[in-house]
Amino acid sequence: MMITTNVLDRQPLFANASYAREAIECLYRVQALYPFFLYAFVIMPDHCHFLVRVPAPETIGRIMNSYKSGLTFDLGIPKLWQRRYHLRLIAYPDQTKNYIHQNAVAAGLVECAEDYPWSSASGRWDITELLWE
Image 1 (cartoon, helix red, strand yellow):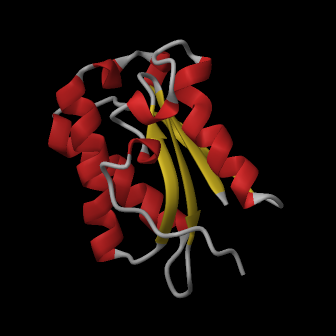
Image 2 (tube, rainbow, N blue to C red; image 1 turned 90 degrees about the vertical axis):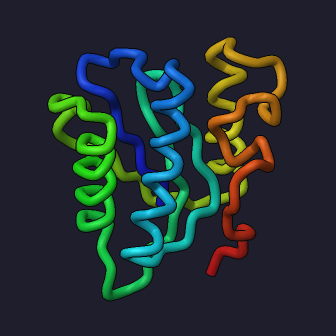
């Protein structure tokens, strides 16, 4: 499934490189606590996309609560997130992965997805190979 979560009032907080890096590092800390498969992600200035599969007994709610509250604490920004997040069940994971990776290109932040450092497209971050069941 694809998860999208937005910064409160769509403020471009993750344009700050140290905040963007912490957003990714927090994602991996949550994954260590509540194991899930992470296939792709992008941390955009004002929102995040994640392509994941969450095996039982873990839940998306537990993972997202931990991620959003953990990053709020880590950054010391009391009102960081919009209240909810969006979930999309997907039929075509390869297309969804491409959409996530092309987000920074579509926003005009880079010309090539691999050049955006806050995305799994950059090759700098560990992700699970996309083998969909």
